[in-house]
Image (cartoon, rainbow, N blue to C red; front, side, top):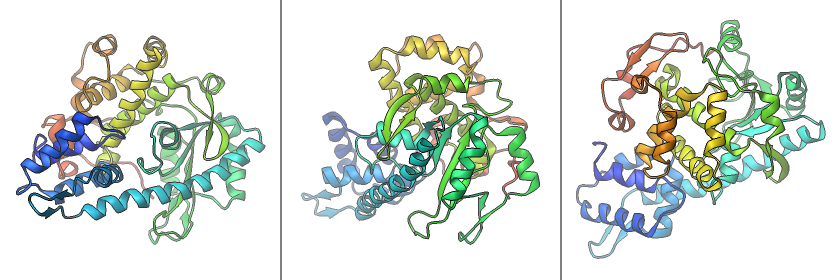
Length: 378
């Protein structure tokens, strides 16, 4: 299927938490006009790969996109879409209970932290708890607090390491892997707990000490980020998340890292609509709050122009009209050839041979990479 086919167009239209009347009408028209040839298997596969299956399920259920009485056709797989939304709602409710307990104990211990990425975005950026799939609890902390956080997690039954192949225990990483983490990664090695649930293979908590990877040329002043964090309620307890400008920069940097890194390309987690949607929704909030001047200043302070421009450039391509042209122009590097590059992080840099939109929906993208990741996984 092509990047401009009706299936890809429907996916891009529905990969957002709320739809305008125009988007609802356009989606129904695309489905109805192509009903006899519409590849529902492709849509299901791509929605899963792009981590928006549950979002499509909510829209299909609410707007009955699966039923066309004039043609007497019931769309196949519609129940899978709707069930994904319901299952994700239940899953996120369980994660809320678990991670709320973690945050409560951190509060009692007086640990300063800011919740990053999915946990904060899912709770405060999306109007429905079932719309965004969340996994780990990501915490920005100062390195001096890492030992205390580790003690709290250990008391709760968490262990540091990787999930064993059988999914029933947590294994320590090899010395080679531990060495790689110390040299290249801005996180401590993750903590996991196995709950014994089919819908939640593990609970995970990541401690982060900088918004940017080591060796990236960018850095963030963590004490200052924590000083200006926003007090919020997360998972039912008083908590904190990054200020809006820092949250957008963090989300852009995370997207850039995964979109260009061979490790994530191999694991087919490099290009996902869900990540660009996070950026689009945050950018909209920055626009509404009049916060672009402050955001751009911090991007330059952190020396993160490459990462942020990459994310904003492709987000505007996928969700046009959300980022002002003058913002993109102000951040645009003199040399934009890096937008089509991947690799780095201690490995050779390569260039893609196909346009971004074609890669986005290419199920064989992993096999087209010119090299394999050297990141140790055990």
